[in-house]
Amino acid sequence: MRLPKWLLFGMLVVLLVPWLGETLFNTKGEPREAIVAVSMLNSGNWVLPMSCGDDIPYKPPFLAWLIAIFSKYLNGGEVNEFTSRLPSALAAIAMVMGGYSWARKYIGVGVAATMALVTVTSFEVYRAAVNCRVDMVLTACMVLALYQMYDWRQAGLDGARWWLRSRMLYYGGAILLLSGAVLSKGPVGSLLPCLAMGIFCLLRRDNFFKTLGWLVLMCVCSMVLPALWYWQAYEMGGDHFAALAWEENIGRLTGTMGYASHDNPWYYNLLTIITGMLPWTLLALMALPQTIHRLCGVSNHTNHLKQTIHQRPAPAVFAWVVALTVLIFYCIPESKRSVYLLPMYPFMALGVAWIMEKIRTSRCLSVYRWIIVAIALILPVAAIAAQFIPMKHPFEPLPWWRYPLVIAPWVAVYIMHKCKASPYVMTLGATLAIYFAYSSAIQPMVLNGKSDKPAMPHVEEVLNAGIPVYGYISSDSLMRYYTLNFYVGDAIKRLDPSNMPTPPFALLCNPDDLPEGLTPERSDTIVTRSCDTRRPVLLSVYQ
Image (cartoon, rainbow, N blue to C red; front, side):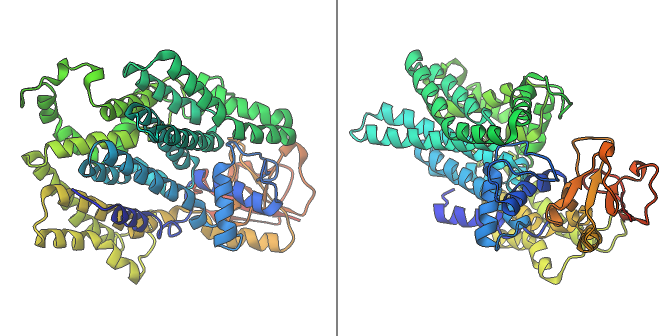
């Protein structure tokens, strides 16, 4: 399937960007990152701003810088859901377009287009692309740097007259991208891509000392800009910042953190790959017998299993090495999350694209096509029916203008059927239409009802009366009411029970956390189930 670059770019923008602000913050992770940008703009401190009263950021500031810049120049200095998620969406678009250009150069335009569409419609990638989290920006920097490193090596092998200038550009580009990765989440952003590239080069029989030299130099150079920030942050935060940085970067890897953080067994990563690659996991499983048949050389005269790694196509080896390196690396620490494996997904998408090319005319792809079409036809019916079915947590009512967006899969399937599209095209088209309907209409309908934002006027009323508001969660000293705090402009401070403030003040807490010995003038339940703590939230005013 041939897909012009401008058309692919337009599809990615329409799928991701216009709907970023439609879904309210409904988990603690997104507002926690966005609040850092709010505190940057409020205080003017772009190095180590304090939020929630006295908290310093857990992550380096690259994402917060982007959010603050977009908010300042696109939204008059106000951070909202759209500007908070825009860096992730743009990073995803850049990563997909970079993968398309790389695959088109070394493999072919058909596989490149399929790889791009499979990447963005893999559930884990899509979810990270529309969330305000550091993971998508980190992943884009790492993956694009890997493409640059591959180009750097290939330019040297080609031996063209312009190879020196070209290699310098690729090398410098990789260093800047790795610097962005380190400034997103720490040194792992540079170390992991360099490790994967080093393994690939050695498997391709490159000189060991040359490979080690240029990768070590690249890694060291990529740490220069982040080191400047770390030094400035240490000057401001002192030992507290140094301890936090050590725990987040070294303690998380070695399992020596002072608290449990997403501890999971090694097979957790395999399970998250299966769910994260949906719906393409189903196609891979359906095509597994045929894929094994081809790999074993039963369906042709070439016995692939007898080929050495050196004889296999370099892009295929590169994709396998990167994916396996990321997987094995993140099986080591006890802390495991599905988003840690995001750098695998573009390379796994390449594998799915290769499978689709091989089974283009098979019955397997035809059957899978009808499964996706069935989902595309059923999804709008379910979304519309949910508007009229009583539920414990009711969905947000659909405004009239979202109904055409909900039925987009019907329109897409009808047009492709009339045009007699092949199973290959219909599979990709129906999948894109499903994600479009979900992104533009179904996701806000389902998730907005979970947000704590409706309670914002109650907190603002107290703040406007000149009464400071504190938050206290006894069950977790690291937890805050991030969602409410974001929507009131980082005005909620952390309460220290050993140093109670003097009335008047207001307190946000769970019902079990009301302080003894003080009687509030009034105490109201403003949230029945917080999206941050999964418990009710009381607003108590002490005069």
